[in-house]
Image (cartoon, rainbow, N blue to C red; front, side, top):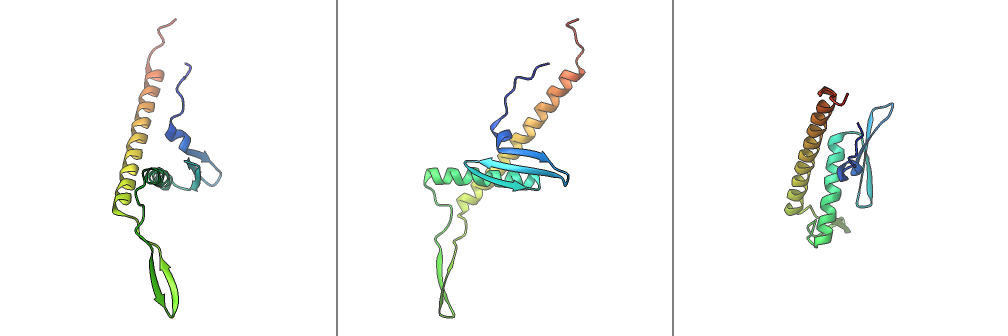
Length: 123
């Protein structure tokens, strides 16, 4: 049977490569790339890339302003924390990605069972 399905955007963004050491995941989205050793970390980085891009395009702030401190007569800047809106959006993106990947794996498993388990009636 010929499979005419095209790769989804998630397949293109999250690729798994088998190496002698173990699986290696490449995450590529919006011009950014990251190599990860676990699937969980790869999904987290993919969500990070997607959420960051959405916040940059919409103009929402990702971080609170930086704070300046004086310590031993030296000026120190502490980077602002992530905003609560950004953190919530990141968590939502992770949940949605996991749900999409699980649904895709389920449909692939079902279609595989249908093609291998169904009798061939063409002959």
